[in-house]
Image 1 (cartoon, rainbow, N blue to C red):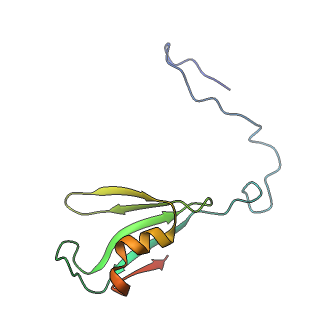
Image 2 (cartoon, rainbow, N blue to C red):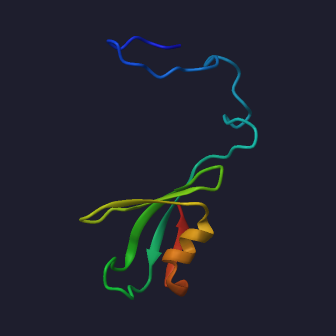
Length: 99
């Protein structure tokens, strides 16, 4: 269903939102987004500090988004949790802890 927003294109919603949902509410082969935090036990660089330093989410296709809620926040995307660990794990000094 498209709507006219004063000459601008609007989002087109496909399908019937009133149809019977899938058993877990998601299409087959999909899973719920899993959220986590990065727990830094020791800060080698002196930049991020220790404790809960970042927040993340893993999508059903394996992609990961990671945000750094600092004074200068940033947002990063990774193809997998393994990629996050390779970049930010610091040899076990930072851990991925699921919520």
